[in-house]
Structures are given as structure tokens and as C-alpha cells.
Amino acid sequence: PLIPVILAGGKGERFWPLSRRQRPKQFLSLDGSGESLLQATAQRLLPLADNWNNLWVITAGPIADGVREQLPSLANHNLLVEPQGKDTAPAVAWTTLEIAKRYGKDAVIGFFPADHWIKNTDDFEKTLNAASQLASAEKAIVTLGIKPTYPSTGYGYIEQGELTDHFDNLPVYKVNRFTEKPDLETAKSFLETGQFSWNSGMFIFRVGVVLEELEKHAPQVLKPLQEKGQAAYEELEKTSIDYALMEKTELTYVLPANFGWDDLGDWNSLERLIDSDGDNVELGNHVTLDTKGAIIYSSDQQEVIATIGLEDVVIVRDKNVTLVVNKNRTQDIKKLLKELQNDS
Ligand code: GDD
Ligand code: MG
Image 1 (cartoon, rainbow, N blue to C red):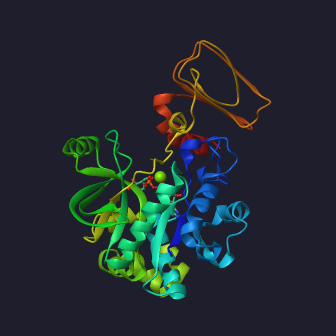
Image 2: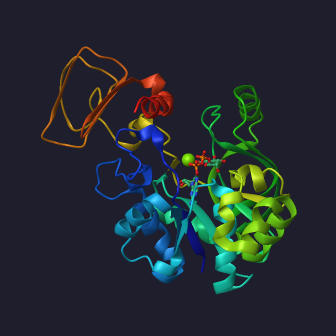
Image 3: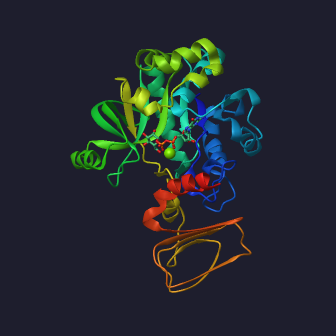
């Protein structure tokens, strides 16, 4: 089996005001189903893990209680709580060290973001089974590649090399290079070649393989954690696994991921998540004359949001906050939050 680890320490600020400090994006149910992104992630990974004993979560101090509440079946010794968020490289390194103690160096583990949407669970499982087989057969860091649709600057890019093998009928390619969050020009040039896919943010490998690679390419992350455990966090620099390891290692493979994937980056992704037959995407009680292309979200169904003649706006009502933002400025919510913090 695979030991899945959910990376659940991020803030997801771009979903403010629905995401708040104690309630980050992974705790939200963005499709209105009532199941949070974190809960859906755990449910999707359980069949691969076999049972709750093999499922791990690493998260940050302030939201650890929220994780326990959301995943009551999660074993307490499978929940790692970071004293402070230092991005994903320390999270991956620390978890891998802990997992090595329990399962040994040959265990195959996988890291999964807590806040993604996946359409077809059966295909997802099939792809992950193939990825696990590859990781156990080869010295490999396995990634899942998403077919890119536009030159995004918010993703990692994977350049596909030669075809090496098949597992469960799925083709496996060696990766020539990995580039994290390129600028727009570079992203455009990548897309033109047709050889690049987006990095899905999921990584699968053997414990021993990744420890060796971290020692080689990111000793500044691994060593302090080896020596001091979580006490090392204070001195660690913030760095993501994509920069610290993926851009440097030569052991990367990619499997094309065809299960339907969305990383739900900001409010606009609701348009892809929710089928809407009208003019607007509405989660909440929206009454309108001639508003088009709007995304409306209210956490209280009793409240009415009334609009007339608007275009391309996002309106979100949650508790004491109402946000109205132009659809092409939703990235700037992070900036707005900084202003708000400075004011208070
Ligand atoms: N435990 C822990 N600690 N988890 C963290 C931390 C941390 O300090 N920082 C982030 N995470 C979690 C987030 O909650 C999320 O589930 C996952 O790690 C990835 O972090 P993001 O901050 O969302 O990364 P990203 O979206 O900018 O980029 C990554 O994902 C893209 C796909 O969505 C990269 O891997 C890209 O290459 C990739 O394309
Ligand atoms: Mg992300």
C-alpha cells in the first residue's frame, strides 16, 4: 500500500472572507456539498492507504484543532503539527523522517495537497496505483502531470522526456526538467513546445530515495530536522519542495493525470467547479435583474443578495464581511488582507 500524507498547513487567503485564520481554504466546502476539501481529500486517499492507520496529515499549530475536528478518525500519532509554517520542504522532510521510523526506508509514501478538487476518483486511484508501482520499482520521484490550458505563472512545469515504461497500462516518462512558477514569457514558450505539463503538486516516492535526494540537494532543510526534530523549525528557512528539491533532482518521472483536476486557486475557480445553467454561478440566495457572469456566495441562505445590471463581479457574504470584487482582481485579495491587518 501507499502511505499518503496530506499537506494541510496552507492559508488559502484568496478565498477570504470565507477563508479566515482559523478556517483556511481546506476546511471549506466550496461546492456546497457540505464536505470540506480536506475531508474529500482524506476520503479519496483512504482506499490507497487501506485504513486510517496509514493516513497522515501535517498541519500548522493554529489549525491543528480544526483538522482533528474535521477528521475525527485520524489517529493522533499520524497528525504532525508544525510549530510554524515554513512552506512545504520542511513539511515533506519532517514527515518523511517520522514515517521512516515507523515504516522503514522501503515504504512508498505520497504527498497530497489538502485543497484540490478531483473529478474522477476511480481514475485517480488507478493513476496512484501505477505511481506507487513505479516508485517501488525504481529510484524515482514520481509526479503527476496535468495538461496545461493556459500559460499560468502559478504552477510548476514539468518537461516530459523519453517514454520509459508502462504501469497498469499508463505510460511513464522521464522528466527533463522541472521549473517552478515561471514568468509569463517562459510559461508561453513552454506551452508552445507541447512537451510540458503542469505539476499537480502530488509527489510519490520511497522513503529512502527522497531522504537521499534531500541530503544531496537540500541538506539545510534535512539536517536540522534529523538532529533536532521539530525543534529545528525555528531556524529553518521558508522554502517549498518545488524549489528545494524538484528543480534540482534528476530522478523525476511523470505520469499523465487524466482524472480531472483543479487546484481551486481563487473565487473564479467556482465557475469550473459548479455547473451553472443560468447567467451566474450562485451559492446563496441571489435575486437579480440583468446581472451576468457573476459569482455569488453567501454562507447564510436566509440572506438575499440583490443585484442589478452587474457584470463579471464576485460577491461573497460571510458573517460580518461583504466582499465585492471584479473577477479579474481576485488575486489581489491577498494584498487587501495585508492592508486590513495594517489598519487594525
Ligand atoms: N504542513 C504544511 N506546512 N502544509 C503547507 C505549508 C506548510 O508550511 N505550506 C503550504 N502547505 C500545503 C497547502 O495547504 C497545500 O495543500 C499544499 O501544501 C501546497 O501548497 P501551496 O502553497 O498551495 O502551493 P502552490 O499551489 O503555490 O504550488 C504547488 O502546487 C501547485 C499545484 O497546485 C507546487 O507544487 C506547484 O508546482 C504546483 O503546480
Ligand atoms: Mg496551491
